Length: 385
Ligand SMILES: Cc1ncc(COP(=O)(O)O)c(C=O)c1O
Image 1 (tube, rainbow, N blue to C red):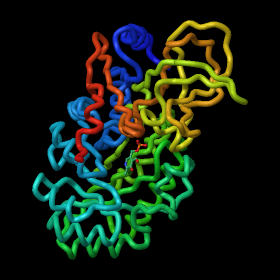
Image 2: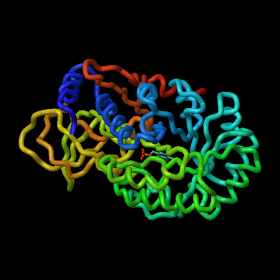
Image 3: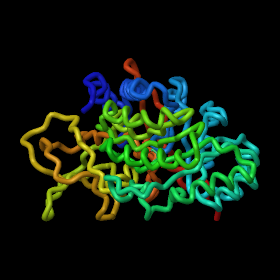
Image 4: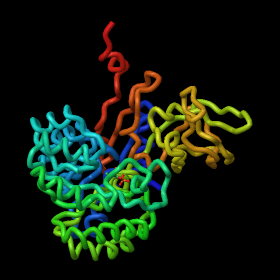
């Protein structure tokens, strides 16, 4: 649920701005950052930029000691723009074409996560002497949505554990500075034992490789993950590694953000729908992963009923939530789609020539516009002919 002062500020903001928009409670990001820092006092944190790449949040988290985890050239450029130095940026991802590596050589070389043999050879060629981590795919059946599980043996990520020793040797032969290993099991994980199973695979590799200067244990912290239960599971690795790195994204920003949308109609088919001015173009996760975000009415309505919430696209997947109990709204009443601060704005598209929504941050005293509304003209600006 939302903090009361934030909710009151949201209701006031609604009088002044058009929907849909994203709004963020800065106190929540601050609190989440503090929780992580105190749960893992010896770790170094790399914020996963993809969760919410707003320059505002990048600068905010950098000031609190975070580095940046990226997976594309654009995210690296963004991190540099926000003030991160190359040594404070880690570039992961399975595909880094020559064009990307040449651009990094010119702009400043971040730490690179190596994902395959082809990746290793190409990075060695274009970024000689780069500092690298090798990503391990532990082949574990982690419990999360299929699309969010990256540490299964069927996924395209990382080296199988048995290939790691030869890959480390090869990286050294090619002149790369091997910092250590990288593990990322998936996103939205809520069971400490899933993390622990991944950590054991890394520990077993230590037996073969010897201790490593860095072990990056990735992100994936579910919103209600018990950090106090997870922290002791890191201890055996902490004892052997020079430094532990972590890459949280969702955990920091998801609960801080809401997507605010208005109801513009009700329709009863064989289900009861509310028709909204936001949907999959603004918030893709329900259509992509079947995510079902909590929903908060920002109005005092009549008797309650159960509704499905449909967006404006002509797609049957354009449903933000199903079976939500809400007081009956009037036309124009607003809803807050909760837990939309991560993988919300970052995945918004301009599908159907829909401008991406603006973003506002509540800092406890006033609203800051961090992301301007996208003008319609911008939708056509790149086209010729
Ligand atoms: C390599 C890597 N690190 C970190 C993250 C962040 O995950 P989360 O937002 O679940 O913490 C991701 C997410 O996809 C990832 O792929």
